[in-house]
Image 1: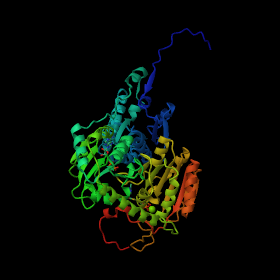
Image 2 (image 1 turned 90 degrees about the horizontal axis):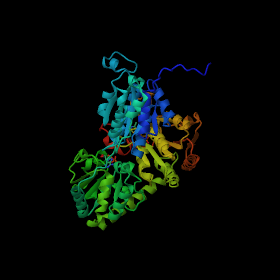
Image 3 (image 1 turned 135 degrees about the vertical axis):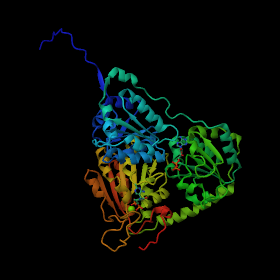
Image 4 (image 1 turned 180 degrees about the vertical axis):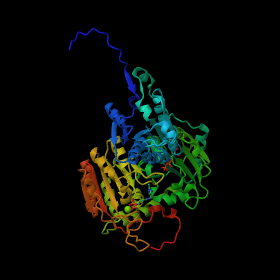
Amino acid sequence: MDNNNTQPQPQIQNLTDGMHIVVDALKRNGVEVVYGICGIPVTDLARHLQEVGIRYIGFRHEQSAGNAAAITGYLTKKPGICLTVSAPGFLNGLTALANATTNGFPMIQISGSSSRAIIDLQQGDYEEMDQMNIAKPLVKASYRINRPEDIATGVARAIHAAVSGRPGGVYLDLTTALLASVMDKDTADKTLYTVEDPAPASIPSDASVDKAMQMLKQAKNPLIIIGKGAAYAQADDTIKQFIEKTGIPFLPMSMAKGLLPDDHPQCAAAARSYALENADVVMLLGARLNWLLSHGKGKHWNPSVKFVQLDIDPQEIDSNRHIEAPVVGDIVSSMGLMVKSLDKYDIKPDPAWLSGIDADKKKNFAKMEIKLNDNTSPMNFFNALKAVRDVLENYKDIYLVNGGANTLDDTRNVINMYMPRHRLDCGTWGVMGIGMGFSIGAAITTGKSVVAIEGDSAFGFSGMEIETICRFKLPVTVVVFNNGGIYNGWHNNLGGGSDPSPTTLMADARYDKLIEAFGGTAYNATTPDELSKALSAGIDSKKPTLINCVIDPKDGTESGHISNLNPKTIIKD
Ligand code: ADP
Ligand code: TZD
Ligand code: MG
């Protein structure tokens, strides 16, 4: 070949395409990890993510990928990203996106979609679905990008919607045509930018702060209820300062456990009923008065209780009952102002209130110790949880993922948390299936060890993701509390046939064998001692581990602590 070719070369344009622009826009906005499942039309998109150094975590089911993205959002205050294929993949991810919206976790589900023209005439395209409109009622915002020059704007709008105000799920639709569209690279690069201040501070009025402080000052029996909105806000030090300086007892909602340590002298968790029945002023700190707090009314509450509510969402105020002192703002700003104004108000809970709570706590601790020390064979929930508790006392920075009914409620009551945002669970919906997705999301995002305590039913919803855990070699130890069923494993078929009852699962199942298929470490624990050794070994190894924890199928209450929500029927069993 002649190297001295002096002929003029045709001008080759420097081109890019929709896929690359999407990747560049995500990179430009600090996205570090994407969770998802590949297929038409997004496979190359995932490859290009890796190409630019964004981690891509491939899952076995989109719902788990979505859950991993949602919990990444909760832990980082940045939107977690889930990538799905059209129609069925999109729908599989949508449950997690809706759950993220319900819980206030910032998340963006990005999905490929089929040809607009064919979808709109319902002509039967491959994986045809009007995804943007189907997502709309379940999310904070739902957008579709049709032109490559709009990609940066679409990504920016999705980020703003996910993290501003009350965070939530956002759907972003990328059509096949968009992904394949071609554009001059220099022009495309000029469209890209990093979003400015996507979660702006929201500062409450001085008057609202003053009213709240006055109410707390006048209270004899004040109580602070801390919710996961407060944990999300990452105002840990300010909240601690306010609580310790005022001396007001606090009650953490499930995922707010650990914001202040559960063994803090002002923690009223072990005196929950007493505290709710007797508090005269309750300050809600990033917690909703939803079903988890009996809507702030009824027999669980002091009939003359008054509320202060700190929330970023003005529409939350008065949603269930009258709020006497709403403080609308973000918790960093609101708590900051309240701490600053502390010197002006002499807030002092009645000593009789504090000693009443202490006495109730002591009584309940004693009752709990009896349950925990009751040795049974096979194990029951409480003696198994005592073994777990004693081990986890040595790993106070562990991320604890928790799903199930009894397994959820009893673990929440027995296992103390010591650090903010370290307890990740079924949340506002009480949804099953978050277990492995949350575990993977937490391990990937924090690089720290995770223990998942899962009911045997709960585990089944995302169990195949143990392959993902093994493939990515994550420091996750899964403990399956195997009592042979949904709630328990002792019910019979009311029709007398040989089919198992609707709530029965296999009590003799060896869930530990599953992880052996993928090279993880397996244990079968039949005594508290075996459980304790297996759990310590699993955590210490920092390798994927699964413990089948054999629990008496007779143990476990129908629906755990919320049997009262079941419609009343005549039970013949
Ligand atoms: P929990 O289940 O722990 O009681 P919820 O999810 O019901 O918590 O409530 C959390 C509340 O916190 C929501 O009403 C949400 O609007 C609010 N919130 C979320 N982030 C912030 C923030 N940064 N500042 C103030 N409130 C927030
Ligand atoms: N499906 C989904 C997505 N979420 C749900 N909450 C349920 C079904 C209903 N459900 C519960 O509310 S708890 C639960 C189901 C199926 C499982 C309870 O059994 P488990 O826990 O084995 O996980 P325990 O310890 O046996 O109670
Ligand atoms: Mg069970």
